[in-house]
Image (spheres, rainbow, N blue to C red):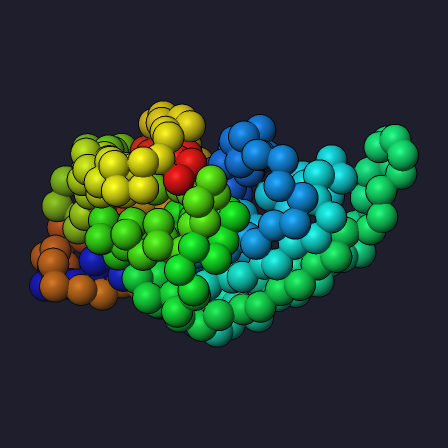
Length: 272
């Protein structure tokens, strides 16, 4: 028997993560557009990226704010348990400082002041102060924990602040599951499990739902072996309690036809 459930070991694959995650880049860009589109007009902003990884979402959001000259200052916090990922997040933030800012504003604006701190912490226990952030955001991270994390994220959002999330949910890996039914795949929670936690937070804080949508994102690979190699390069290790017999696994790997890696994303925006 071979054990091959995907579990996270992101710290070992920080350097290969960005190249191996085109879907995560697409989702970060899509969520960033929603965040900037629904910006409340706050010009001095505290932003927390939870499960920030290498900083794809932070870069996508902050580069748009810079281009629009929307902020005077920003305090950025990246929260992750992988120190090597946080190191790359910090490099991305430093790169933001060298980006040209909008010259179209009238009158011209002063350069944005940017402060950043990488926090090596669990998503469910960020250690940040109550209602300290104007914007809390997370993309492609919360599925590694449980819906109870929503309470922690809500705790750190200021009154009239916003929470923006992109969460992979059930329906992801559909093609892989259909074509290789005995291959263990990640057990994504259904949307309603996350929506229940979000609804509870909304009621507790008398918040307003800004948007709620589900969208599919996909990438194609040459074959199953290529797809599994890619999962490993993004930090999905081959280990866990579920198993597949060796003969079946080898037979699956002999399939040389193209296959898609598809994710179903729950996209939520909430003002508290």
